[in-house]
Length: 150
Image (cartoon, rainbow, N blue to C red; front, side):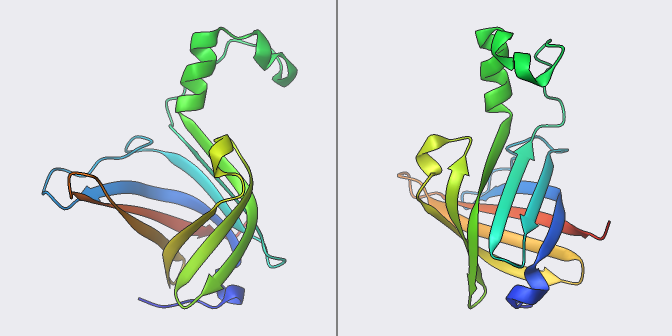
């Protein structure tokens, strides 16, 4: 696996796969479904943005963007549960990229940093990190992205 430079990492990417693997041997899961959607941008100026969504999101049944507040509470809750976005600054150090969150769909992320191991092989970017649950099970989160040229 290759540790990219900031110049090599900068660019736009589309999600190919988001998978969680478990140390206890259970089958992997896909937080946004097996056909989840995503866009990731690393701008050369040090700004970044990430968006993830389920492909099968339900419509809010509104006729224009400004009317989203008119959707039912249940529809808005479903939309929130099926979408994640954040943006801010990014830094790269020794094979790890850190997202310094400045705005997010989850308010608790603002002001926090999200650090990921990073590997770039040709057009494929892999970001990964691990979390250990109280039970001792380690969850490995792995997101595979493909660079977008146009």
